[in-house]
Image (cartoon, rainbow, N blue to C red; front, side, top):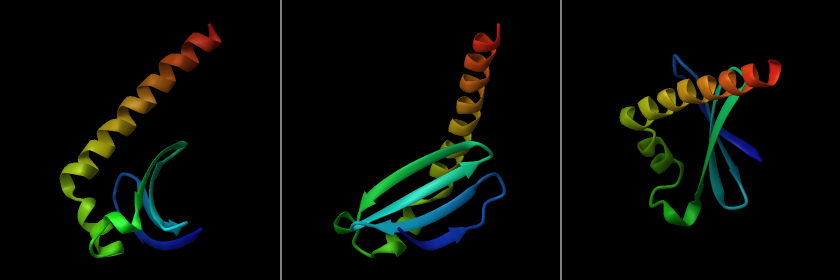
Length: 82
């Protein structure tokens, strides 16, 4: 797996990797992670197309999903401890 780019974002880390003719886009926030895979053949302009996919609307959705993930895990962990 080869790292292509790391993009700045104030709320989470974004890493774009390339492996087996796929771009892997990983977002990390603390112990949580979201990963998306896109086949190179499905993109018209290579990694530049990945940058276009990562628009503001999508990144806002990612941030909301991290919030939901943290809540879900916190609730599950509370049930485990009690």
